[in-house]
Amino acid sequence: MIQAPDLPAWAALLTALFVVAGAAITLIGSLGLLRLDSFYERVHAPTLGSTLGMASILLASMLCFSVLQSRLVIHEILIGVFVTLTTPVTFMLLARAALYRDRSAGDETVPPDGQDVP
Amino acid sequence: MSNLLLAWCITFAQVLLGLAMTCAIWRLLRGPRAQDRVLGLDTLYVNTMLLLVTFGIQTGRTLYYEATLIIGLLGFASTVALAKFLMRGEVIE
Image 1 (cartoon, rainbow over the protein chains, first blue to last red):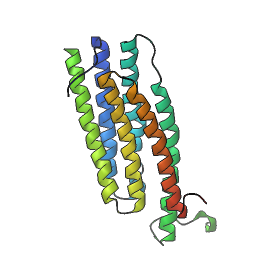
Image 2 (tube, rainbow over the protein chains, first blue to last red; image 1 turned 90 degrees about the vertical axis):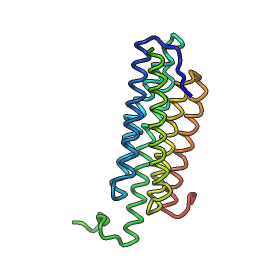
Image 3 (cartoon, chains in turn yellow, cyan; image 1 turned 180 degrees about the horizontal axis):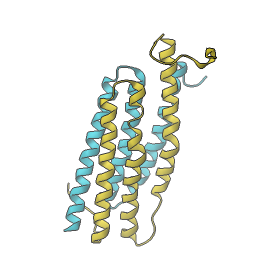
Image 4 (cartoon, chains in turn brown, cyan; image 1 turned 180 degrees about the vertical axis):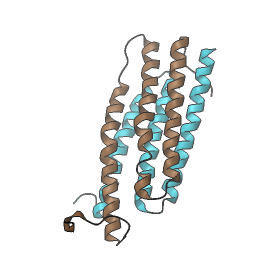
């Protein structure tokens, strides 16, 4: 279904640019999730979508609603702050869990526990 | 003219986000180990949030914003719970 809100030309062009850029960056991050080899490389890729891709699309949304309602609409910042705070926490927890599982499985490719290193 | 361009650009962006969600679902279904599946789930919900924001721009309604916040909250809680489960074997000790 092809539709768009009724925006002036400059706002429509800026919104289109930010939306397409954010979606393309998110797609690149998800392709990295598909293509990279080990788990520790793959855990880096989706952060591209959850930082720059998300910021770009939220900027487009803020611009669109601010022009539509003729006032400053910035409640999307709440989503941005929330995702920016939670993504590192979840990926750190996940990487530590994966490291623990690999060590307890006796995998030789992961670095050993740091306690017996001088 | 510029509104038609905006409409096509939003639809194109939604197709791109759909492809990104397909990548995440592929990793969720095929991931060799459990941590890859959790990573795919996390990517899937972030991409879904972005897709809902583009639906909000397309229709001009603020209804989608609240759905986006709820998906973000529940996705964070679920990923933390799954990572805890992978670490300890149980969620609440």
